[in-house]
Image 1 (cartoon, rainbow, N blue to C red):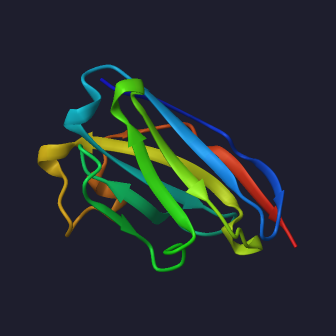
Image 2 (image 1 turned 45 degrees about the vertical axis):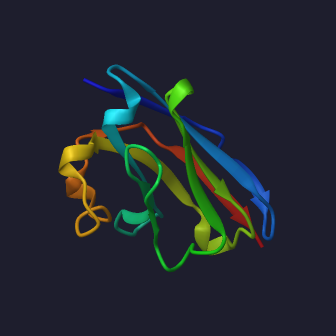
Length: 128
């Protein structure tokens, strides 16, 4: 069992930056791949970014590519999402999720059904 706790959300003006954190408890962190998803009001949850167990492979949604960066500190059991050049359309609840790295691959990494454990979410609001 893995527990995930997100933090770092808040209110920011367009063009600003935020860094989200997701702290994991449980088994060895390196055996898990991590993903970030988001859900805006009235919309379905969508993929944002993902990283394999070591952090050597990352994938991003086209909408955030070049602006967001996923990284992980395995010594701290924490994954980060650095968000720069934020836009009002980035407003959403952001969730981190994890799955055993053996179940993660490039073909399914962007699918929320791939992930077994989810955090409670953190709100990000970008004002125009």
